[in-house]
Length: 190
Image 1 (tube, rainbow, N blue to C red):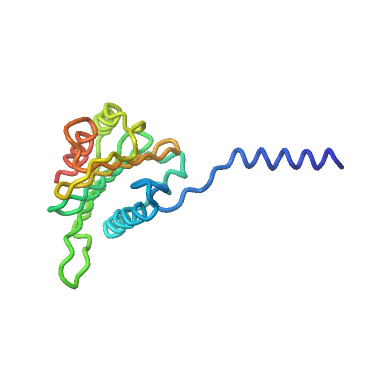
Image 2 (image 1 turned 30 degrees about the vertical axis):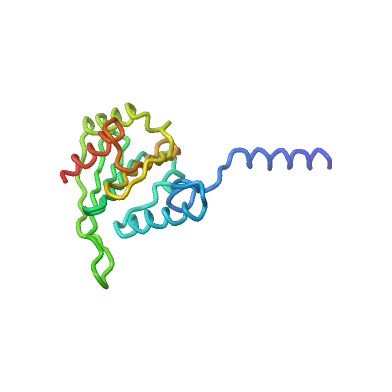
């Protein structure tokens, strides 16, 4: 009887160690700010834009270790908000989804005004992944402290091998992170 209880306890511990918590929502807690209220406000703003752009949660997609996907969410001060999502297939080709929303007008909410999907070649995928490597994307801090009034927010998310990374920058200056974002915009032929 004691052996049965010990065996059962070991089985429960083993199963518990091998399972991970299901990821839900659009972003991990604390993505945008250490203050929970401020983080919630910024997160709600980003999620509202993603919902208008009819974009899925990459954080949830990271529950599937077979998914490899990257998304640029570009939220400029004086231009149309845009999402560009690169989904990489097992043969290293990819689809690129571009979505653009208009600005809200008086008594009218913002809405999706453009949506298109194009194919990306293996070379384009390789070039983008090299830019991410140069930016050290998977090791970048989620956010920095640069803020401003004009300019724009540039958020790149990535999912690979069950890992999720999000990097949020306000008006990034020259460098590999900005080049990766601009590369996706150029691929989408904006």
